[in-house]
Image 1 (spheres, rainbow, N blue to C red):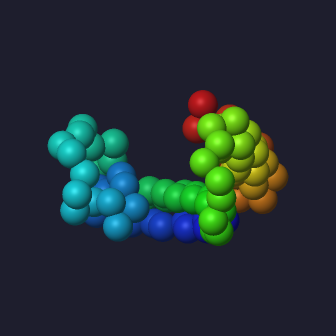
Image 2: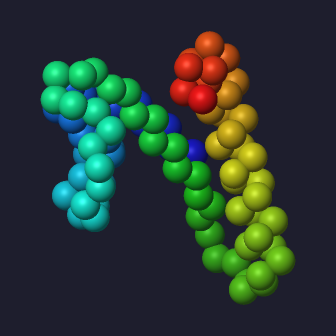
Length: 84
């Protein structure tokens, strides 16, 4: 699992590695406004037999780990309420 926290005041609402190739979208922040981005990725390395049920089960497990990490270790409950 990789968790990156990036702040900028340039009006970028995507992580730096996605800004260049992103499709046009409405800005969510204006230049001069400090924003914080939390980019979380989770993956499994290895060789696996192609099995759709296994892949779906792992995807749900990874999603659950990301949600747990986000809510229990990255942000506060107050931050989640503000974001809602």
